[in-house]
Amino acid sequence: MNSPLVGIIMGSDSDLPVMNQAKEILDSFGVVNEITIVSAHRTTKRMVHYATTAKKRGLEIIIAGAGGAAHLPGMVASLTALPVIGVPIKTKSLDGLDSLLSIAQMPPGVPVATMAINGARNAGILACQILGTKYSEIAIRVEKYKRELESGVLKKVRKLEKSGVGRYMGMP
Image (cartoon, rainbow, N blue to C red; front, side, top):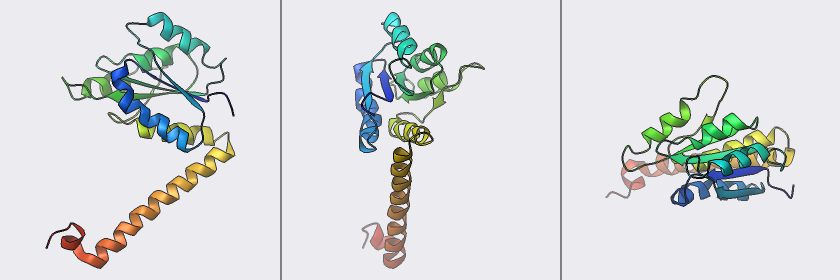
């Protein structure tokens, strides 16, 4: 797997701190990816080209982050048969609720898997889970990751039960 399997796109470079979390998780799972800026409103022709050539270029999943009107994930989903995972980006005016509703409220026939506001990390994990249905080495990494999550929580459970709430929280 030398060519990117996952494309990460965002409407603006201001989305990069959030969307880089998807890249980081994909990198940690060894999933080759690409990341770029594609604005649905300001670079519409670029968006159309990106979406319509994605499969031919070897992409299997697109993660699209957008804030405000947040048309990017839905517009990309309307142009490709690839799974699109939408990441609503938190906005100043409505705290990302506008982004969330724009991405989640897609018409029948144009689905977008919608994450929580600023949920790019989960978008990366979901992309790995989807790819894991085809690539066993990614599935193994996802299973290991899930076991590590469980282990981390159980470690905290033991600490809480041993020390009590006050000491666990650092209170006298």
